[in-house]
Image 1 (cartoon, helix red, strand yellow):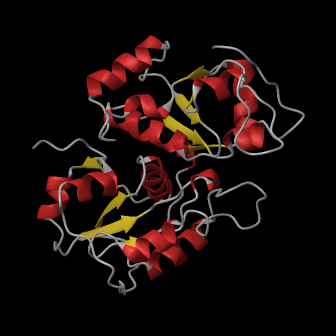
Image 2 (tube, rainbow, N blue to C red):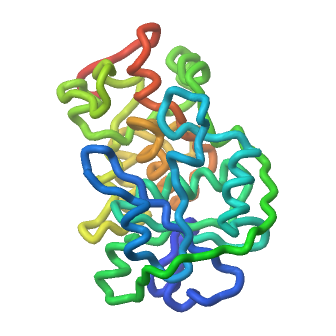
Image 3 (cartoon, rainbow, N blue to C red):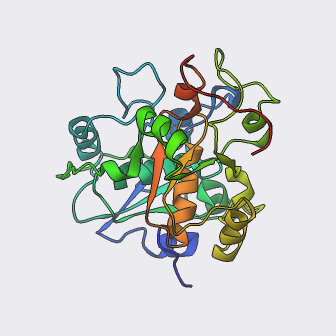
Length: 283
């Protein structure tokens, strides 16, 4: 089966479980309303050999915003201890709908590790096919990681504020249509409702099939065309807190878009301030 760059199939991973140059990562993360504990679920069952990547821990502890990118030094320190580093292919999965795995995929690329892919369909598809899981503790051997932060893959609030005026980059919001339009309240308290002026809406879930695998490249291109986004032009993705925005970045990567960045603070930052413009209603 032909692999799509940035994804691997469950069949491929099953065939490469014991490959010496493959490392498997459980990057599961859930919204508080989901009532799920990703670390506890990992301890109960994980793909054999997988290590747990804690998105909330491997973050900027000085920021008041959730799971913002850490420093290169902190990222390197944490992933080295997980046995992740130079010379290995990293495959990330999660127990939900792939957006957390996509966030981990994006983080590795931000810090210079390009040989990383997401398991298409994640743990739910893996288990539905009767493939092995276990609860054995994984004790990785520390591995060197060379961090080189690629700032072209990240946007901050000042860059996004400037873009409202310049419209140099197309801004695509991964939240649901109600939150984007401002007709539904935000998940996190204290945030205004609406979206960044000039942005367009593409809910990340619309790019998933019923089995939580990613839709075809043709479907992705059609979805982008339907909202007027040209993948050949620069794109910045955003969402609630930078998680599902990373899934949009993955989807754009699949169709060959190369000038794509994630607004790390996303709506938690933008909607939580009083000095940022807000638009409501459909794009």
